[in-house]
Length: 88
Image 1 (cartoon, rainbow, N blue to C red):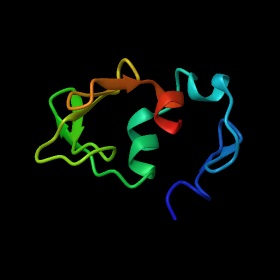
Image 2 (image 1 turned 30 degrees about the horizontal axis):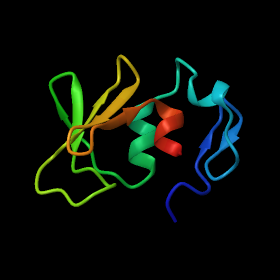
Image 3 (image 1 turned 135 degrees about the horizontal axis):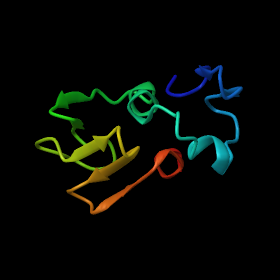
């Protein structure tokens, strides 16, 4: 099922619908919740959240999410970005 059907009421946006940059870059967007809603299991480690990256084969956690900066980064692929980049 993935992202379809999830609703972000404050933003008036439903997962699976087209998204615009204003929604993805909203400072109140909870990036941790957005990533978890796509089926990724995050574990809190200090101020960040870590998991195995869903974009490649991973032996250990290489994806880090920083909720205070609203950014994610995969150390294994040298990829990362904001909420819009995650949804792309």
